[in-house]
Image (cartoon, rainbow, N blue to C red; front, top):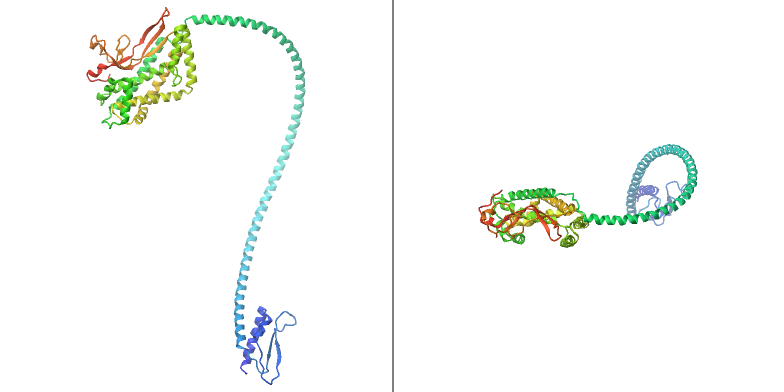
Length: 500
């Protein structure tokens, strides 16, 4: 058909273009087939890009056609259309790969520029290092020269010292020879000296025995002990008064619980029923006298124990040393017994009580616990531990002073007095009042007439006495230096107690 030849031409030219652009394989030529009319001579016409001789690999498209036209089959055209679409898609893919390669090339160029910059920085740093190394090398060379010079000087000194040592060794050999001769002479003198020492030791033993029989002079006199006891009693009074004033200002009474009952039991065991009656039944508000008396009694008992203690631990029992001392005192006399007591107390306390600060803290806690018992017995508070801590906050410094003075009195009476036994004294609850040995703190005992049944309720001030073995070696002479002050049970039936 005449109209088919232009379509054929257009298709063939487009196919030639795509074949050149995408290098179509030769098998795609089968998509086109030539048809001839019957009775016509057919021929073969080859279409290529015109460069067949220069590029043998290019595909050729062969078509058989009539002189007038060729007909492209519909099936072949559709196949070609499909392949063209695939080729376009591949073209887009290739374009994407080209863009990706361009991006990688750009990134590579940027990384290369960055590396070049860093390389330049490193090169500069290396140049600085090389310059620094050259400077260090110069300093090292200078130092090595100086050290070599010093080494030569030291070698010279060593040679001189070696020579000096050789000379000294020669002298030492000569001295040893002289010393050997002198040693023989010393041996003879030592033998004579040993004989003389034996004589001296024998005479020293005799002298020691004589000294033991002589009266020893004490570094402390009675007046020193009296003054210290007076100051101790004053500190006890001040501490008790301070706490009594604070407690007497408390309004109301808390509910009583087990702490109050336990505290009352402990106070009763120490001071008796009358003392508990005084604390519990006499009003305290705005009248601190009763509480001050009770506080004094607690502190006095503790201060007496501290001043007389051989040591401050529970084991071994302090009574053991007291019994040994009594036997020494009875058998050996006052001088030997006093010396034994002074040395024993000094060393036993160092051995058993190596931490004085710990002992002071323990004593302060003990006193505050006893005072807290009195406060709870009086019903002013109902928690023992809280009250004990409160007492330490209010009067801790005063109590610490009392403890320190009691320890000083312990050292004075136990270690510094040997010619006699000087002891602190106090009266126990239920003791019969004896005005020759004690003093009524309120001075009312004369108003009771000639009664001989007045009893002590508690002690408010420590006393002091002096014991010396009698001249006939039987018994002892007991002298009152300070009378302890006491409170009598009759105070419960007297007029209201007022502060002194």
